[in-house]
Image (cartoon, rainbow, N blue to C red; front, side, top):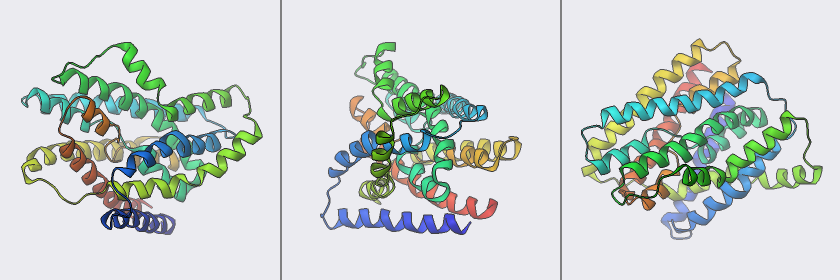
Length: 303
């Protein structure tokens, strides 16, 4: 897995660069909001267009959508049971931290560097199922347990889903691909130029948001969240890796997908529903560090 180790090293260097720029006040953490909007609304959709515009989508790949979606439901159910004795506010906050994965900022850059467009094709399908969890289920959980009784209706959830440019790009590009309609060459060419920026910008953003200061009062809840995410994710992921009768890339996608960090959407949800943003940021940072370590170990073992 020399390719993975090389890409892993590049990722660490770029993340460290982003963190260093923040520490020296060359870039401020609040600048990350604008950078995140550029990634989610421009460079990531461009990468999706380039990756899905001219590939053949095998029917088996649609199973990845189902796996991501069903696992999201399973992990949410487990978290609700385990956190049932917590306060109402904690149930909502912790319940949002267990399901859902950070694929756009974390997985895509690594996958693109290691497996190229072929890898993006697989993780893109996995991300479609994940998107319904992140923009649907997590919003449901956060809203249901919030003290301010935020509006919750099918219309609100549908607006969240349709408002996700990456998700809509998946659906449109995959739909056109299935019915054999090609995007204009100009669109694909321009998207290819823009998509090159996705990997370095994503890793820089992770570095900008990285924080090593953790409040000790959070330790017990943090351990519970991390234990559920990684024990359940690794158990299901490793089991499916050896059980599923599909190619290596399919099985790598499931294994890696189920150990990815907390979805970045949880932070804006915490603002909307008035949850503890520092706690959520702490858990998010820890999952980034843990996932990097686990990926390095697992990919070198199974590779």
